[in-house]
Length: 190
Image 1 (tube, rainbow, N blue to C red):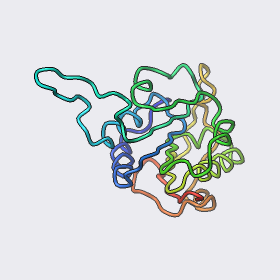
Image 2 (cartoon, one colour; image 1 turned 30 degrees about the vertical axis):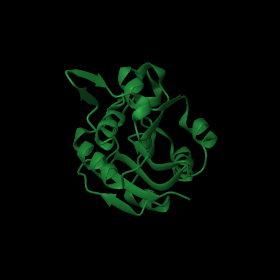
Image 3 (tube, rainbow, N blue to C red; image 1 turned 60 degrees about the vertical axis):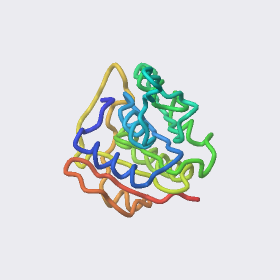
């Protein structure tokens, strides 16, 4: 599904607010809800400025936070993406991540994407997320394996189950509380 568990939204967005990043990469952005929430919360501005009796929407050139996103399924792209994201990369994350500059981002978010890779691909994916990040990588994945096969979008099929130990082996050394998901934190490689 292009949506995550709603119970983890406030935990993840709250954590991102505490980090106060100026450069964010979301990988597997789905319908764009995290980009939208981060855009509105991290800009710390009223998105509409009142100038006398007239209101105007803030121009993207006035934003201080760069939020880039990678999405593998072009059918998910909508007006939320065009509004919230600075740059969109459409395609396979395992092909796009190696083209991005090392240490380019303060925060990389990989929300409910890891289970869509097999374990070997997932390990490579996590290393690439850490490579492009200079500060913090946040990954969430369901605590329990959930069988999921989506004919219309095979990228949504679940191919692996990740445990806390699996994530620790990949360099994720702290976890945020959540009953349904593992929300793991690792330092970037820069």
